[in-house]
Amino acid sequence: MKKAGVKDRIIATASDLFYHNGYNQTGINQIIAEANVAKASMYVHFRSKEDIAVAYLQRRHGVWMGNLASYVAEHTDPKSKILGSFDFLEHWLNEVNFRGCGWQNIVTDLPEDHSKIKDQAILHKSLVREWIHGVLSEAYSDEEAANLGDEIHVLLEGAIILSQINKESWPILKAKSACKKLLA
Image (cartoon, rainbow, N blue to C red):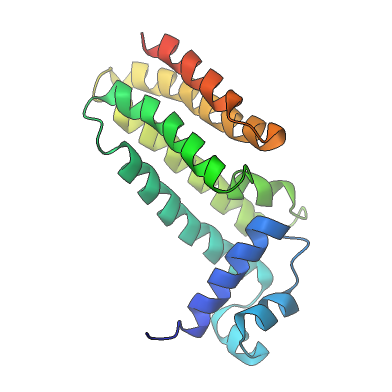
């Protein structure tokens, strides 16, 4: 089996460290040591820890959205697809022991001047919002899909953070119940 390249090892290592330990609690030297790369090699690919975090969030977005799409793919109608997204949240958060959202976690851990990371978090949340609007536009007018989609997006995001805080699934189940009422 081929060994992962330097850039991939750095991103994979940083991803694990940022997600589980936090951005501020993870040092560049720790990433270098755990990725088993030379400092000079790291700087060939990344100029800063912030650039590594951006790469982490970009990769995480692709994986997360892919997993969401796969999880709800069996649902054929938009309403069940949206409700299935809550089931995806429950599955995912249980799988990561309610560690929560990587984007929410990193943004709350950021120094003020790290706008590239914040921009990635905003982009991800905007793309999730667009996904919801897109699914709903199959059953509703564009205006209805946008309004209803924003309400559902708030339910999804709130369910994530409350599940993380409580280390339980009940917020997801309550948000799904509220979503059912919105979709009725």
